[in-house]
Length: 110
Image 1: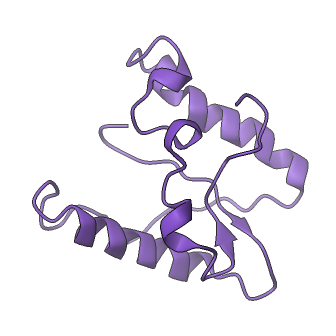
Image 2: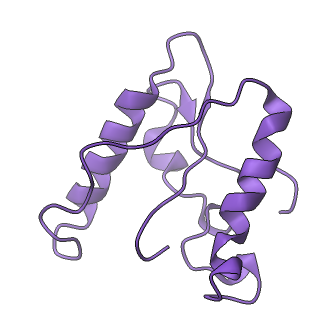
């Protein structure tokens, strides 16, 4: 989205640290795109919503995936240039170092 981002991450072990993951993600994107992003691109804080059951992630994934369609930016979610379903996102960059998986691969609707 042009003015915000939605991500769905899953803790893979008891030491998963979402705060650390988000900090590293913000730092990585700032490093990878220093000339494309304004100096103060990311907000200091973020808003999280904890899903307790695995089945709760499907409606959230669909909400995220369909957001560009609802905003009229694309006709189909696969057409959105920054879709994790299309590109795999930062999952390869992270490689599970912080116990979190940001990939939506394998979810319904691929």
